[in-house]
Length: 226
Image (cartoon, rainbow, N blue to C red; front, side, top):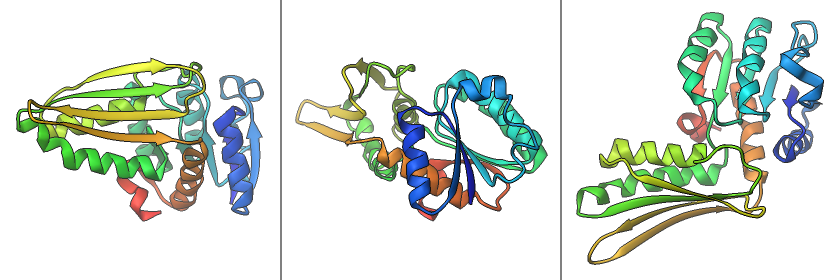
């Protein structure tokens, strides 16, 4: 595949490295290279099969709309823009392109989502709960999109809105904990990312999965199909 990676940050650079390792042809654009989605023209994207975005929340919609106009599929690992999902979904479906986004592309974290969903009935048996998330100091959004996903899962499956406590410290890649507490015991569930590699691998595999498909998808709904 011919892939275009948007973003030269730590994760974007790793996405490009892994894509090369999986024998894809890769181009990378930095934010400066693509101000206001100016580089995402139909002619510049003519030979691209999919665009992978790891940029900033403010850039996602402009990048997505440019890809839609060019008829190109897109995978978005950037978080912090989800209030605009409904409007973007309509544009993707109308254009009959492919779009896949996720709060976390790690296979391990998506397994963790299922563990948390299975544990949610604890909230109906006199347990209280909290969500804790830790990330590096450069992370722009708090709480993290992954923590918000966990909160949503527990609300849907356990019927309670749990508090999220966020920490920003050092170079922590990402740690998410769900704690259930009762008079009788305490249950700890934890996912601790050792590196960004899991996110990057998931994003590349998502682009491979999206090839030839039309529609608007969320990674946690399709990851078992990879």
